[in-house]
Length: 287
Ligand SMILES: Cc1cc2nc3c(=O)[nH]c(=O)nc-3n(C[C@H](O)[C@H](O)[C@H](O)COP(=O)(O)OP(=O)(O)OC[C@H]3O[C@@H](n4cnc5c(N)ncnc54)[C@H](O)[C@@H]3O)c2cc1C
Image 1 (tube, rainbow, N blue to C red):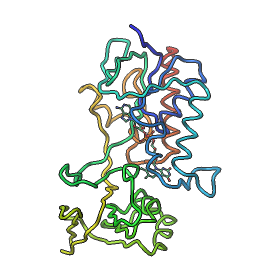
Image 2 (cartoon, helix red, strand yellow; image 1 turned 120 degrees about the vertical axis):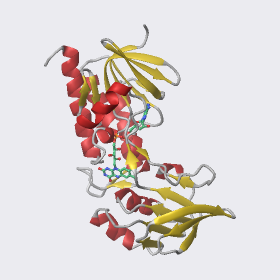
Image 3 (cartoon, rainbow, N blue to C red; image 1 turned 90 degrees about the vertical axis):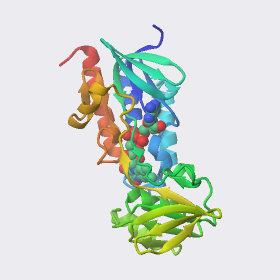
Image 4 (cartoon, protein in one colour; image 1 turned 180 degrees about the vertical axis):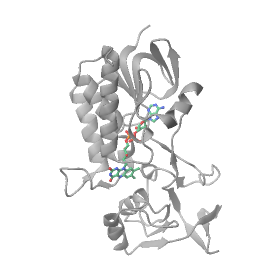
């Protein structure tokens, strides 16, 4: 069979990139498969302010670009394709992708998380779950659902909107972000639940728990991340909840997918290198 690798890394976010860099330097025949863009969720982040060495912060997009440059400069092979299924074949893992099929002796899954799409009604346009998909916001009224770090980060990104409503039960974001956003004159924080979303005359109507309604142009949903296990065989899905990095001999997980409650770049890097170390030991036949 063509396309047989020592290790395949699925996902080109920080965790997958870290794993790729470490395995490449260890001399293995590897490939990283990414369905969209190298950098993953960094494309949705505005300014990263907890990245050591950058006290003034670094833009998410800049860091994504730097990761991409790093991968290519050391010769990591990248295939842009979407993995649809992982199949276990004795000592190999077979990957069924949209455009091709690949086989590996070991596998690192670093596919991040997906959003629960509660309000993403197909009939209503302009409801988004990723900041990168919201292409124009200048002079628009935007509702951001959620009061965590990503919601406050998005408010800073969309600062040229005419009005931003940040809606949620309780502020959970880090103090430094909250203070910056509270200085923005066009932001209003509403401590409410969203009861319903509908559309009327090209506007989105949000019904709040206070019985009040607000009218906006676009909605960004910033809560409810979850794992998407669909690519795994049934017998592996139950193991995902119980194990941390090595799920099955030769099969490792990393990043937000491994630790959905701890969504930080540094943790993605740490679990990425742990998964790569695990794969190296496995490939060498070490315990
Ligand atoms: C708006 C926002 C702001 C943030 N700000 C910060 C911050 O300031 N500081 C901080 O520490 N963290 C921040 N984070 C969190 C940080 O970005 C994540 O923890 C980190 O990106 C996780 O890396 P990852 O590689 O696990 O997953 P991701 O970055 O999500 O990457 C996963 C990759 O896998 C790919 N993929 C998924 N499924 C498949 C498939 N089937 N086949 C092929 N490829 C697939 C995706 O396209 C994606 O590129 C922020 C996150 C967001 C969304």
